[in-house]
Image (spheres, rainbow, N blue to C red):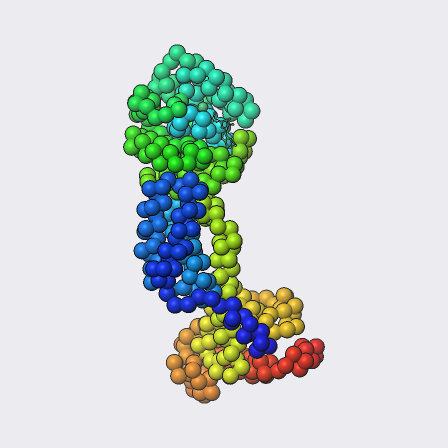
Length: 437
Ligand code: GDP
Ligand code: MG
């Protein structure tokens, strides 16, 4: 058994704190990885500089190498940067919520007008109306109408001779009449940003007073995403972004660029041409995708487990030397509550794993035990032999539990300590004999 412990401890690779060299070495790879994901180079530079500063002097988790630790920090910063939780749409309490889709030609506005209508109808029980405000290509109106038919969602259009502003105005009137509580306006795009387009969008915005202006960005836009997002945001003050075409093999660096430069939250992602291929944005998944360092990231996920394992081994040592006290007991209970960690220790004991599969963990019980330990003095916790009956009474009162419960916990603790000590000193044959009793 102690060989096992030794072996496991040898896997520990971390040491001390991150120094400049560790960080430099790893940052080169991180930088390449971000550029490969098509994150804008200026964003890469700024981001990596910030992370470098943050990382310097940070402790290296025992189960990671310094390089892995740097990636962990980068990954966490990425996650944080891209927003905490998934952002939905801010619906109006009552009345019609208006969403306006803007973006370059081909970004996926028309498709995502349909996807959003479908999604909001299903998930939020909305009654959407889609509005064809792209009057420059007759095909654009046809396209939206086709989408509408496919989904059985009404489309408001007035052909190509009426201005988008007028269309928006009439569409809102119709929405009120028909009790559509969600209006999605599909606007025109250009291949490049131009003044006339921005002016027009601004006018539509003034009339429609949208609750959300969602910038639709093709994830494959890559380096240019920043310029596009920046100018749309400056002109229109967009409220969120939809990152489309993430079903391809693009790593989606545009998400990072957009978020970092404009601060605009990515709210949805498009994952295919079909009209149900839309999902609320997941920062965590995106961070992993952008970083692309699959193996390293998996390793890091496992690191947390490894830390717990190490703590468990620490405990095992304490059992063996019979220095396990109420402080350790409390720590252990905290861990059990988190992960079921006592099971973790026990599983390292050969033959024990299977027997634990059906052990039930009752959270309330653990809270009581914690309360009881909390009522012990420092000395009592360190020296379990002190427990006189007057002390027990005081502890029971302090914890708001009755004395028989305190007695039971103390008895259990003593028995556990004795049994563990015995087990830790057995060899495998003795152990298996005991298990089979
Ligand atoms: P718009 O010009 O902004 O209205 O863009 P469209 O909605 O017409 O989309 C342009 C093209 O991109 C169409 O061929 C769509 O089928 C395709 N498209 C849109 N969203 C996605 C997506 O999430 N994934 C994939 N693979 N294709 C998409
Ligand atoms: Mg379109």
